[in-house]
Image 1 (tube, rainbow, N blue to C red):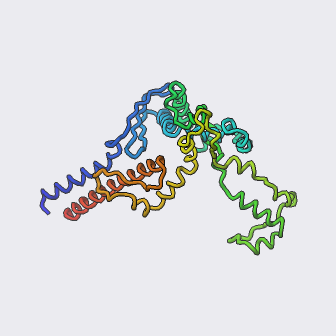
Image 2: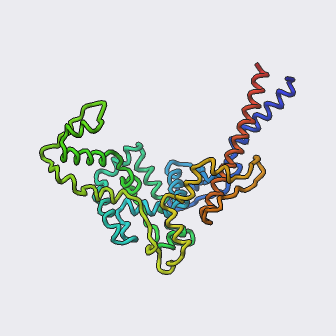
Image 3: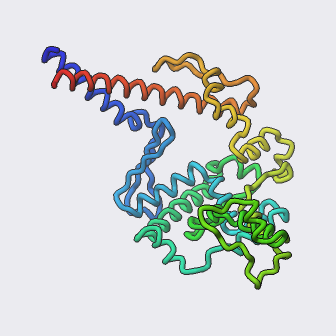
Length: 339
């Protein structure tokens, strides 16, 4: 390889890597200069073509303020459901059927030193989480001034978002994970047939645990629904047609939006999880040709729209993959020649 060809190859390699490194910002879909009460200085938020936000700030406080503001802008209805689950106020909007959930939430709510808890996650936890909450609330107050910013779900339900507090961020309503259900089932079996029989019929290795119930326990009481409040406050929120505000009842598309929040389009999800099915509905894609994918004919309109978004992102990622391959080949050729 000549020096001239080597130089051209190196230039191509550098150019390709520059394209890869800058692709997100070069294809930014949205740029926001955030100036809000509570910020030390303005914050810049760049959203790239994949919908990923890049937040630029001069201080740590402003960085997390911007993150909270941006999260609220992107996912305000999800944050409102999280807040209500965390504070035991779901029954305020969905009625008596959610009362057990709210009771369970308040029963398991964190009641110790919140400052110590927040600083357990990071030495500046109080300041970081406080700034994040300030950002969320700044956007919520913005929607109070301009209700058109609210996601459609708020209008469908006839509700408005509530103000956040730091304890909502570290709520346990979706974080109490463990084997409590398995422990209860084992305790019930021991109460019914005895510890040795349960050991013979089950596997508890590698150790040999002591399964006998504590004498203070009433084994028969274990058969009661003693986890009802626990299960109630950890279960998913499910909407019903009657949850829709009266002026929107009978709006099939509106209820479809709410029901889709449960599992995020279960029908669509099953299609997208199957790569062969996805590929079968995509036209042959050449990087840069810009052709749109064709969704399966059995999808509903809102599912088909989501399908096209996911498929289009798939094509963009394929374009990036091809660019990376070109860069790798060019670099490999250059290094081989140099050595």
